[in-house]
Image (cartoon, rainbow, N blue to C red):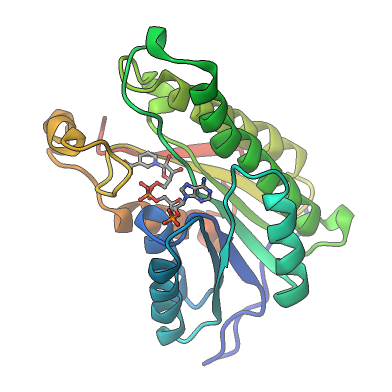
Length: 258
Ligand code: NAP
């Protein structure tokens, strides 16, 4: 198999390629960007609306000594992924890894309350855009396409296994689709120098939750608390690293046992 290793960084210098992290302005994506920057990885983060938050993440990453940029991309818009990669190709060049992180939950309720617009929106962002992002990344990383190998990390959810009953079964289904992408694309790219992996966070303390949900659900977690974005970022950083060189086509639960 072709080596997926990126060139080792020269002491005091960052690697030449960049890790693209969608939804990097806050939550798990922001924690991942800051963590990877501390690990010496150059990053490009995307955000939908919160430009100031994104610029703060970029400033923190640069302060860690790496190259960092923030691109605006509303992933529900047609052409957003193409536009994002066109800009990346022109301004950055080499992609080392994708963290397919941006995602949305839908309002809580039973399936019988859903309309098709709601389901379509969550599928467009969590599935259609995520598939397009992984596809474009694969086209740049795979050795048969002239790439140097790399890693794609899909940020799934424990909801994919638990089903999201009475909360967001459509969200759970969107993340189950992402899990299947991890397996299938992982197999397709196994001989291409590209590992495709995922994380399934449980209840993580970010702004994604409806008011009061964290407090309600955290006591159910066997480890007795909600997780932090930094704890998920640590798992992603390991999966991206060469330490995880024999891991592909699989998704790691980061849910405190729930
Ligand atoms: P978050 O705090 O709500 O942050 C979401 C990020 O995604 C922000 O950077 C946001 O940009 C961006 N984003 C939101 N909608 C977007 C859109 N339509 N187009 C482009 N970007 C968009 O979320 P999080 O908790 O960190 O979640 C990150 C990932 O982890 C998601 O895929 C989520 O499903 C998954 N996850 C989270 C948990 C949890 O408990 N937190 C558990 C399981 C899985 P702006 O800041 O510009 O709005």
